[in-house]
Length: 133
Image (cartoon, rainbow, N blue to C red; front, top):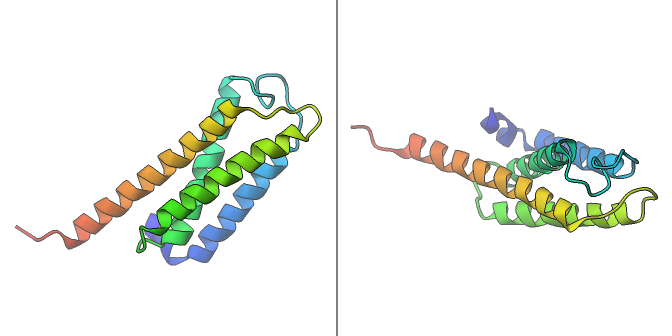
């Protein structure tokens, strides 16, 4: 399935843009305490991890395309910068707060997605090029 998204990297890029738009929209909304205002609730934890995992994963797939692992670092940096900018954006939204904790959660989701994608690349490369016994 990942290889399909690599071959159709324009679709992966479109998904990345849609996810970034959803993150921006959600950051503009006011939520109950613990969900969007710097709390440590389960919903906030899940949202940050899933949203930024998805963003980084599809950005990585659309840039790397299964071939150029060097662009993985670029995808990580872009995703982390977007996570920081998201928190700065929340600072200016009435009823919202920015949090360093949220930046760490975002970054954890990004690093997790990038690591899993790299493992996938390595596994597929070794499986494809390993000599038969």
